[in-house]
Image (tube, rainbow, N blue to C red; front, side):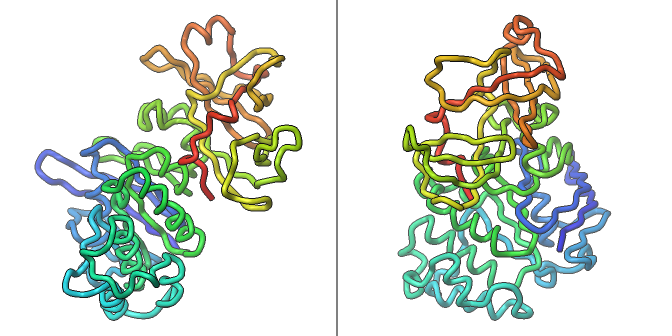
Length: 355
């Protein structure tokens, strides 16, 4: 199942031109404010007319179909629950509006989002995070072939965001529909994205699997230096016998991490910002940092600023590090060289560790 887009929208001086295929899983739409992310989602959902092109959802051309016939679930920044119905009423209303029962059943959605304790509550009695979970459940129960999530966590504080993210990870794991997800948050993108579309000035400039895009030096001008980095997928192992710290095995070695909520055998993914990796030409000794691994430089990319992005490969995993121009020249970095990367175990942001 996929969403295939080749659309052109012109509104005054603004033009949106996007050609992209979003596969099953989470496709994150990322870019600066005003680049057309929300307009893109609204066009997919039928809320914004398209001047020309095609919107194909699950093999069916929906370009000329009205919004209510597209089978697209839409989650706005605000929950927009029906105020005269309680939570159960909002969910049942969405289920009745769905053209057919597909995907999760009512009970499965309730269990997935842990909504059972909320069913009798009125919308005004819900916290921001609870209301967004109900709104997400409502979108799922409308029998969608595609979900559009427009910055669904942007109105929540960091604590609520961290509590909602596991529900979105669970949704990604248990559904087979394309999910188009707009966010400005790098940690959200790293935790949720299977696929990334980078946008600028109304156009899709780069797209591809999340791990490839986030570690690509060519993507840094569109991601921003702080968002660029590495997403590593691996499995939790037994704790390190010397330190008692958590261990994750990945294609290229092992990482020692702070305490994890996930236990041995669980698959996790971790984000390492490019600016948090230190490089050395020779294997360092006597360091307090616990993570040192060897790699080969595959790309060097100098931008207009003072930094150089260094892509290197360890096993089957691509990493991205940022050093200054001065350091790159002093170290005489070059493609094909062996390099040693140093990452402090205490440097991992818990917000960037997901499943």
